[in-house]
Length: 243
Image (tube, rainbow, N blue to C red; front, side, top):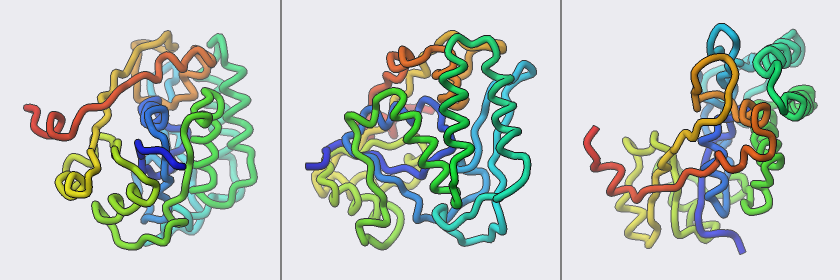
């Protein structure tokens, strides 16, 4: 039987630790990749720390046009981006105690035979989950496999119900569009992430939580699991707090 705490997320390219925190709390994560790709999303880009400051690592797309879903967007099949990303990571992790783990994980994904952005981003997420054993406690599913149409809060609610969810866990961006009371009317609570952004030893200046979780791998190894430790807050508390 699938779990009761549910996270629904677009797949992200080597996401930040906060995404892994959501996955660690979830009984089920539903990949939400049959929705329109938007430029500036985290599906094809993530920050890494370099000696001169944070820099974006962006996957180039092939023949992309408006309206394509994340599952439909093709990767640039040739070109130097793969070598460039690995070179950036080597520079970022130079001297880190577990750099070899991070680079092996990254190269296995980056050099993989992925045709679409969804395939690449999902592989990168699942590889991080596997490294920290998060896949032992969280099940993974694809939104497109449920045959549930619609959009927005209605579709999200139906997906949560489809896997037997009783608590929907979401990031802060949903605050402005999610119909919280619709969920409550169906007996499903809504919880927002209470990100702790727990510091760990990090290269290249002051700590920042907003870089790829590969950085946590490089600096803490599998012991980094103790830093993936945030909890949640009920939506009423989160939405009503003063800004």
